Amino acid sequence: MTGGLTQLGQATALPASPDSAVLETVPDPHPGTLYLVRFSAPEFTSLCPVTGQPDFAHLVIDYAPDGALVESKSLKLFLGSFRNHGAFHEDCTIAVAKRLVEACKPRWLRIGGYWYPRGGIPIDVFWQTGIPPEGLWLPDQGVPGYRGR
Image (cartoon, rainbow, N blue to C red; front, top):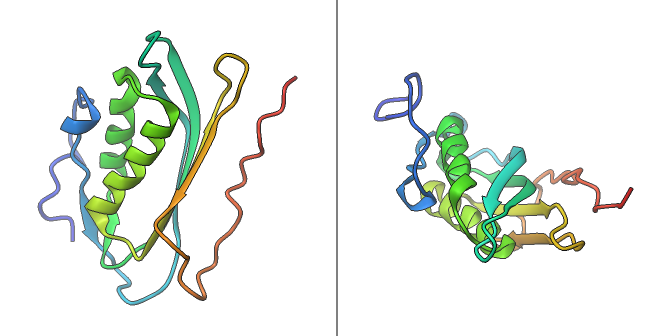
């Protein structure tokens, strides 16, 4: 089941960039079963491509597997590789989603990127691969819109 994994169970350095990060998958233990997998990354960071200042987001990734699951340590390393990557909020959010789609080829995937304010304006980015499969239990992502203090 875990044959071929190169990162799980051993010390692995944080990739230098998202392009160099390796997203690994494992076989779905319940092929043919419609269910939802959720990853929540409340401490996602990247850099503003203009100022170099850090940006922070809470990413919520939901997907319905179709034969493969994303191995979570490889996902953690992939997301961490954005720490020194300069890109706008929209680019980071969609790039994460598209890499996941490429890696595990899910039946369906959506991502919510809930970014903390930059210049006083919070930016939330949402994307999905299409209409969710009929019968998929799809809970709310549970991240409230930004509210000033």
